[in-house]
Length: 199
Image (cartoon, rainbow, N blue to C red):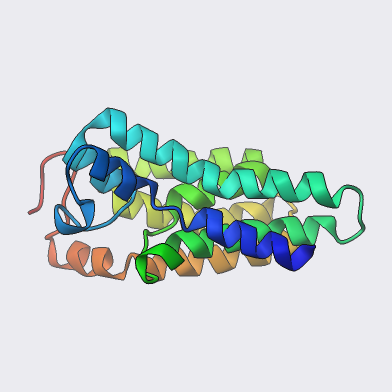
């Protein structure tokens, strides 16, 4: 049962909603803008409505598999572990999707869904870090990286479990790695900004 849930989480996480919404609008988002299938690129290319739909859909990819796992596992003593792992599998699916030859998004929205389930109050604090960083800097990528790195620190400070801390650290490292091109552009002053700065 547990391993089936991991496969289920991965396959759900692999659904490329940004790409699908783009195709409905007649655009392959992988070939325009940043080339990413996530909400930020969809928003730039297709507008706020489809950007918001992508954000919500990618968030639900992290949340819904965990809800299914919680329902099926019930009160098992190891349920919380497998629920977290199911969420992590969905995150991995988004970043390295089976359906797109393992070339996926950066995982921020899917991680948001995972942590809204696991740790809602720390997640709200991380969202505040994201919003403040983007507001001040103008860079969504920098906000995403800052929030990802803040999440394990917030969980540690609020007394989260060791398992939750480990999951948050793992996801933070993977999000930073997925943003390595953005980090390079930030250092070169070439990153796109919602304020209109950069290339």
